[in-house]
Amino acid sequence: MAANSTQTASKLTGVQWAICVMAAIGFAFDIYELLMLPLIARPALMELGGLAPGTPRFNTWVGLLFYVPAVCGGVFGLLGGYLTDWLGRRRVLTWSILLYAVSAFAAGFSTSLWMLLVLRCFTFVGVCVEFVAATAWLAELFDDRTQREKVLGYTQAFSSVGGLLVAIVNGVVVQYAASLPALSTKWLTFLGTIQEPHAAWRYTLMSGLLPALPLLIIRPWLPESPKWKERKESGTLKRPSFAALFAPDLLRTTMVTTIMVAMGYGAAFGAIQMIPQIIARLPEVKADVKEALATTKIDDKRFDADKDGTLSEKESAARTRAIAGPRIQLAAANYTKVQEIGGLVGRFLLALLVVAIVSRRTLLRLFQVPGLLAMPLIFYAFAVADHNRSLLTIPLEWAYLESIPITPLHLCIFVAGLLTVAQFSFWGNYLPQAYPVHLRGTGESFAANVGGRMIGTSFAALTPWLSGMLSLGGASAEARIAYAAAAVGFTVYLVGLIFSFFLPEPKAEDVH
Image (cartoon, rainbow, N blue to C red):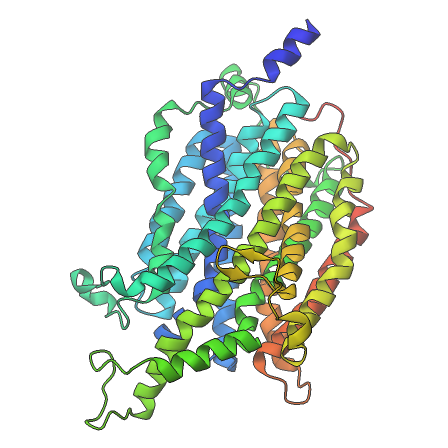
């Protein structure tokens, strides 16, 4: 009987495959939406607000775009976790994906910074709710522990596919934006007008609509979680409660996981996601921009030039922004591709190790200890890159990704992505098994949304603020951000490692 059970557990049914596919798509576009902002923030702020990178107001808005949506997502994500336990996993998952897909598409038509901020808030709400509903659903779909761990691990690996995909899409959009249909708000004149109807960042935002399309096809065949449904119909499903998370038997789990998830998100948002704000200082990026400015002819249709071909100060700034912006975006997209490949490797490595290593503490430290050493060194390397071109930014003859010449700095960000992103998959496996069925969504949402979204993402505002406090002998804005990211990366890894010694091991029965 045991052998037959094991054999049956090793094969997924068609319905189980459909659920896994839908969850994988959801995970992929969760990160797709989150990693979109670092790629589009700079050009969006320059167009919508006329803000110069490195200025106090620019840094303030970077922080607002990262943190305000995260707070909204955290607050409503808590509610979403509660609704997941009360209304069911399938219903909440479906509506959360539709919410972030539609709001992301609408954000492409933003005519002001405030409009972009509001729509990003809606996107974050959908993302925060979707993660909790999907992991709870998958955890309850399989009785076999090994199968459950593998499914949770491998479906979450698609998060990094989403991160890689957004970098690829952004790179393609930057190259072909001028050929895409011009965007207009003539049909909603009260919104204002779009200044640059072919801006690449707008098309990148609009691509977030993609996950809604397969959802409309698969949705009719998706069943509810069997464990949740069985208890709901039998009347044995307890009412979810936030207070229950702080009962004596769950208090330590709730507090430790919340702090540790916050530190993981702090590493991502306070350090790794600062890369697009840093790379403008790299020698090869500066050289590329300088060449583009020197060789690109003035387009009289786009810029109001005098008869002799000269531009006013305002028009000259607009030309510089239009030419330099895509070059910097493309470089940022290339670094993001390498980072997400590292994250993808980290997630698959976690999926392999999670079955082999029983101790959750040991498993997590395999990524925390190297990261504690690597993060400050990596971002210090970015800070001094313009002084060490021969060492850090010269392409390696043996390493190319498509047409991207890989440098030692690319390899550094690959390592940072591997060590940090793998920890996100760890929590996706750990949290569903740390709480009973009636508290699974609520418990996950507290750690992921209060810890990750509300506290962890605040480091995206902390790093630019800290960089503004640094003088460093007249260092550039980009260098100051790199130094601040190094300090933040080291600190959050250290705190996470300390709290790992207090992390409870899951109970033997795994899913109650």
